[in-house]
Image 1 (tube, rainbow, N blue to C red):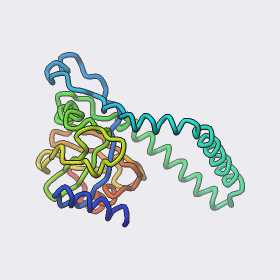
Image 2: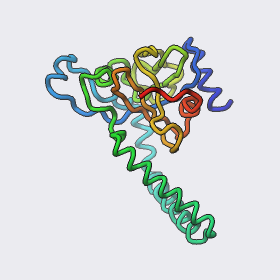
Image 3: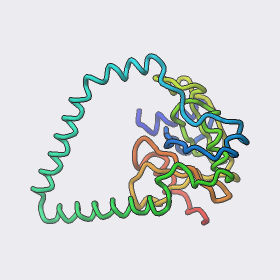
Length: 226
């Protein structure tokens, strides 16, 4: 089954008719001001810790870290050799790609997209972020784009394996409240997707792979009004 087909099966299991779906994560939530924290009832700002099974898996992976580091070094060396042996046309394509990557990174920083949200705790995105781990302590969300808005699904509690088996709908955002946006409209391949609220505030989620099902879906949609 293709990746897209699998995501559609997951949507059907939730009873949601999804146009696109993708597992996403968010960056570390910053500590809000004391008054915001108190008004929100002191919610949690981190996912739950790994369960014992996950901790065992992490420990078992430690001996393989030197091998992974070596493979990474070999990969980097191979890339350097390929660049040095590249033809004139290939070097030009690589130069253009490097410039695009630098321009992308500069735009991400310029627009504040290297942050998890726009920074306004009183905005709709900030208020939704305050409740993020109250909905579910799992570190990921299945983000589903529907005709009526956005649906977020996850296991209620963090799991090490079997996220699809345990997931349920944890939040719904109607289209009148929020929409999904690719901030670069497909110009760059990134993992970034914004949940942009009607008051202009936004929350950044990161897909597991660049140019995901969500990005492809958003390319087919009319550009949102600014």
